[in-house]
Length: 247
Ligand SMILES: [Zn+2]
Image (cartoon, rainbow, N blue to C red; front, side, top):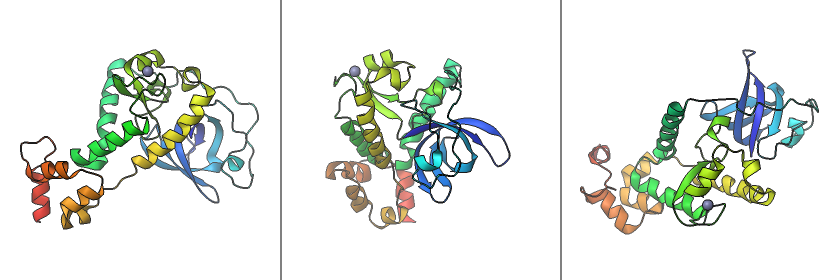
């Protein structure tokens, strides 16, 4: 679930933001990934002045009801459409940002050997094929909500597309690129994607028994061996990790 909201902060500053995967905390809070800040933030429902479902384009007239809470403050039924290009960004800056986002995406897994397992699962979630044309060739990670509309390469906003579809999607809004049916199915996949990236490295388990910990995360026997013993292998966890373990 991705929403675009107009939000009035406690300091009375108004901003327009894209938020995804909101979790409700009654009576009046939601916690969601804020694409503007690049992290999970808390929002008070009473401070959301306007809201729109970003993918369907549907105006949310009552956010309370929308999140399954007793209605309190219906939003106005008419709402000006958001500008098509709210965050124009110079190409070079956009490229740098994409690179940084890609690095940040897998950083929580700490070691390449763990990140690779999740990367494989991410591809598998999309059946190892382009979501649009089903080609298995030249697959890429696409920003579902495009970067210039404030979308970031974060769990819940990543779709596997082939390079041709990615190019033809370019900066289109998902609404104009996918069918209604494709969008509905994609919504489920993106939710599963958030779960897939929900990970916290367990330092205690790692220190206690590195091999067991790696295996429990789905690392194969052979890769665990490479990661822990094979200094010349790209999956080797490195001397820092060894030092950490001996502490
Ligand atoms: Zn394709």
